[in-house]
Picture (tube, rainbow, N blue to C red):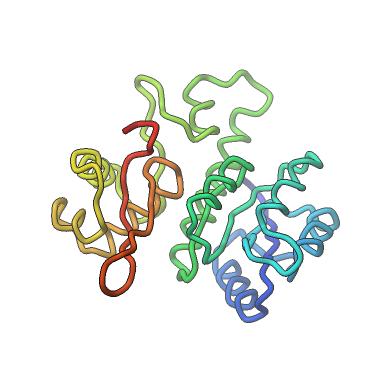
Length: 232
């Protein structure tokens, strides 16, 4: 996409807003045009500033970010929405995806993580521009919807820093085992645990895998990943 991409940052923690605003400013071609600390303020800011993208927290003082997303879609406002939140519940992720969110980024994260998502959003806008005013081929439609590519189509883009080849190995390991933690996956594929977790979280957010917390053991609960229930 040519030109600057306008961003609205929504979070009720002013320090988080400050950090996220700085992150956005660090990506060429993006700028924050407004901030909001509540759901109602976010809706008003979208109507007033018409940003291209909203960085939207789930937990807001007056309504959830999911409700904000639903109200935007009910009004026919097709602004891009990236959920930026500490909420990891599968229900929240599914609601965001069903509501038409562009992505779901779990806090805390660094500049590189947000930069990758912003670049993905820019790429999506560019794809939409390329197929605008002409008939879209199936490959174009698959790319826009983020679905499974048809025969001969290129693989879906992964966030910056992740490779399709390694992603396939991670998925194959989970499908073969049926249920894995990040540590177990790392041992099987030969990755660092943090790298395996990044792949697994990406696939969980996009619905390719299911992520869940397993309780009942000594210490902190363990996050595990498995193929979607419908596919098992």
